[in-house]
Image (cartoon, rainbow, N blue to C red):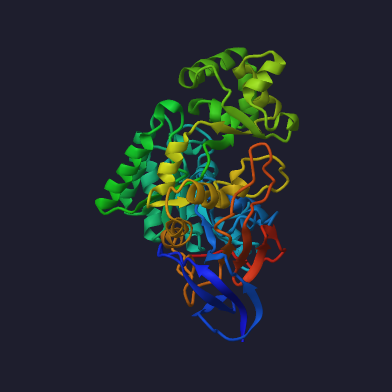
Length: 497
């Protein structure tokens, strides 16, 4: 007898092929049989009129930061995510000064979670431990320390290395440093992913740098949350996607991922403080912005790039100043009778550098172009809400939004092709050999939804609203969400390579 049979569904198996109608039998967490008249089961799900697909894989996640404190990963499973690739943008939960990456991964080996997680080791995390936040090249001994810390993580099951070249201290690394560390990843047949050095005026040069790292090491690479920021750069993604194609035609393996929104999300300090001034701790940043001369210097440098108008920046999360959440910098400035920059700099100081913002800097056409690109995977670029009540809506709404707005309503690509980009492609890219397909012997990570109604409801002003049309989410054959509500089950695991 089977544990579960999903009956009468429209099967989209993850390969990109058109749907077919069949039943799916699950036994011991695996897909045991696909067909008709499969026999008896302890439980049955009637999927008549619904679409059945592999569980969604979030190809760029920060879920590792919540594994110990919020193992349910609620905002993941409630949008259909059954596996997350975490430790992105150069920042990972380990190693730290107290625990190695290997120790961290071993401690999670037997733990259970709402969904599965894969860990990348963050280059910025390595550099902070070995070099600190100083703007300089590592000494030979420091480079060796980074390599040893990285090897420890890879030997204990980490999938690869992530770069956060926009953030300190990763931004202080030269290309040669990236290549040396990527060579270590190549030894373990791992993968590198990068929040590249620039996504606006120097986007093309930043993409070229990443491709150079891939070319010099032979490692597989993923360009993180690919975009072109600021109006003067809109359309550049057509050029950068051609660069990815050319790299692959030359024998390399390069992919990208994308989230379905025109606003990014990061800290206010990273948004407005130039790279050269970030090589210090939070107290140092506050002291710097409290000095009138330094504040004016930073204003001049940032304004030369961004201009005086910061109305495109909205406070998304600021626990020290919760009354500002959901408001634009321009709105706050007008109420306080200050300039946009003085308002923003004061918020950085008053929040002690703990303020995140949504920056509305991309265009819809670019988002659709990247979403439709055959080598683009789908990502949230988010962890979980934890104690937050305000955040970027991508944390909760990404995957239903892609299926509802961009597939059904705007037709950027077909449903089977988009499911491939959400399932089998990231599974193949990240080496998840038992995931990403509805096929006998594969893990029973499954989504069941109404393709005619699925849609996100999370908005910038109300990020807590759940999706519509997502009927069931299964991890290892267990229902972890029903009608987009978490059930409390924790069959997910830390997936070790």
